[in-house]
Length: 457
Image (tube, rainbow, N blue to C red; front, top):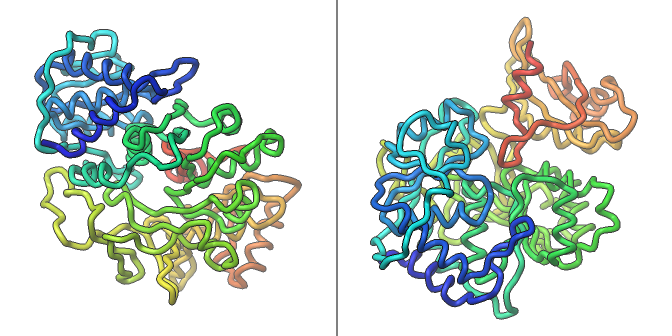
């Protein structure tokens, strides 16, 4: 029997009448969630491959668990995925049943909604293992499907109730993305309470922290920046937060320093991929008194290994995926992450850029890491945030910056700041545009694909 599912069911039994979910104005207790899970399990019937296409709500994870209890393979569909990617992923996974909030978006198949997914509970028989599929981000083409199974048993071993009593976690990441999925399941396994937000709003995050006395949350760097810059932040009581984890993209060092000042010594970073969710981490205690580490994503976690090959980070170990759908098992092989990085003498990993985001400029083909330039631009007092990418020029690529200003700043001043920071013209954006906000993907990363499309003409 699956250790993961056995542990989940035990947690739902043990939780009793304590709140598992706060979602909008509704509260769902552990026993109410258990009973709803059993009805969903009955309503699903015999299924083979189930696509879960639901927004953030308690039923999203309960449908996932119900399908896993049926022995089905579950494809978690990112709510922000464009239609071609979504349909391609379902076709590649050979999906037989779709549970969705938007039935009109699925032209064929056994399409169910939560309104018609309720049955009379019967006995549960646990499968030997769980099988989940996650699409890759698809930023460089059609997404591949990542197969995960063993990491969920590992999650059941890691997460346990705290001796300090139940905690309160805030969720803003999509439940159908690896980060959000791990957050909601970790909360359940710890017997904590999850405050669910459907989408990100910096003001709503601050309000939830104060109202629910949130102690644990995770944010991407752009979302953290929005929280730090929100006008309500200074008058919001955030003293309840004891763990604020950051990930999905490198964080500008000055923003991490600001977060430590606002939230206290509770801020840490993590590094992982959907293919390998836990690679490196750094805690607040490792940052205090070590400003040089503010740009690091930490040391490699136990059970994982990492190396740098031709500038690219490669990893292997316990948190690895089983493999890509249709591809071989990963086994003990090394995975190319697509991230460029370096280690310092103490084993701390520093990410320089995504390999695909490096801009090759100039007649000698100088490789410019876009992230390094972004972080430098963001230290200008008139710059709130910046995105840097390559655009076509007459003789190759040109460096282009899109900037969100926090004060009076001109394009020439932005370029002069880069020239001063680097002392090399290759690192100076050839063009600078200003916007009110940078576009984000559904999981909270800066959407450079959208920026390239908007500013490359």
